[in-house]
Image 1 (cartoon, rainbow, N blue to C red):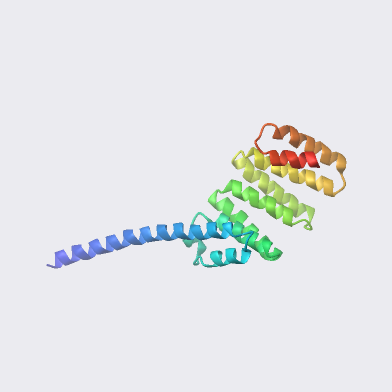
Image 2 (tube, rainbow, N blue to C red; image 1 turned 90 degrees about the vertical axis):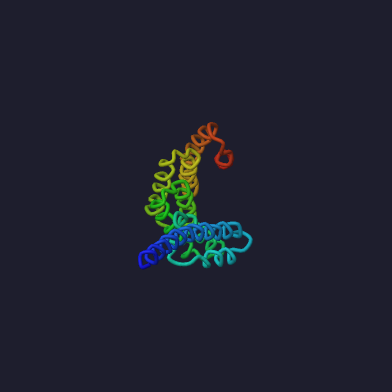
Length: 193
């Protein structure tokens, strides 16, 4: 009788353990939906976006495993829409760190470009490191459009520093390279400048 009770107890523990694992996977997927909802509300109501993100339980590494980059990027953008630049900066830096860990290189490069653009008043050396990191991320995935976006930032900087010859040279290179990609937005920006 003791053997039967022991076997029954062990089977219950095994079932509970596997169900607990399934519940964790289900919870991670449902919390990922919170990030998607936050993203879809970014421009309409960034405060609602932050409420969705705040609803995700801590620790985040457990609740949204593999989605931290997107979480911090969305949180950063919501703070940007609310004109809270210190929190934007902090969340973008966390997103870059998470992108490295999660191997979310394209999103990491995108975050770097956004961080570079909000750091307009930042020192040149720090901004240069951000562009180098963006290039590193886009090189990892061989993202030609992302690399062109990095080059566009150098052209923008030359323009803002009244270095028009350098700006024109860089933009002509970008225009030539965009003929081989589908990104007509970059071509349009380069032509405009």
